[in-house]
Length: 403
Image (cartoon, rainbow, N blue to C red; front, side, top):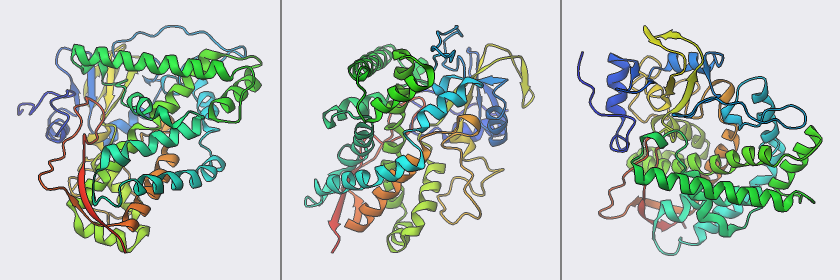
């Protein structure tokens, strides 16, 4: 057996975790992180199995380093947990509650708003011929969309972006000073959301937070601040992270593959396969945890109850038994792209349709209004040093205004 090429999850492994994934798939597909009760799953079939068996691999108590504790309930008896930290029978209830802000009717209503924001952001830099794309566009668009959905002021943009970077899964792998910052940012989100909900509780307005309050009262019979706060927090934080990362990484992939860039510019129907392939090779969430509810054996490895598995989406998306030539960026793959960047099973990302809508509109307009998009001279894009997320720190580009 060969030696593990790098320590992962870790900040130092964040730039290029793929050698670890390839090694683990070949040598130890169910890899126990040394000294910890955490098992990293790297093969596609194992991840699919785990997500389809929540009775074994539970989302209750999923966060690393935590214990399972009983939670209070709403007036109708629904346990107060977030939708990502619950299992059936409550999980479908939490999910359908949040879905009211993300259903097809809501998405149709959001489309003009998203298009307007995209055009405004492009207008802000199009005459300059150069821009740092991550800070000027990628980070701003999903945060602004989330603010408009919730009914928050655009001035909350910086806070919303920071909330989206909260290391819920990767926090135990942070050094002490960054972990302390993680807790500070998390607490600031909790405080703001609580205050925003309280301010709307008596006479809920017709914004996103107000709608959640009305829905919760109609369902449960009386208002529950903890319940609305829990679900709203997930929607606010989750609505910014993955989309922002994919905007930056997607554009870099096009820059590094000019032949694909030309094809997508000439035929905008290729945006969908381009986005699916970009999501596959650059999964914005590299892994998420689950708690092992009972002793189980997976891939020949015995995993004791109470430990955790890490579902390695980034590795599964490069599993050579599922994807031919998996490290290649190929928008012409046959059949539907079976990437799992938005998860799989009951907890597949609820915000997927909104993310696709934002990404599609953004790239349609960027590739229509800008031309000759290149990396700025001397630019060396690097990824954020996150143990679980994958995105760019910055992306300086030059361009010309399309005629």
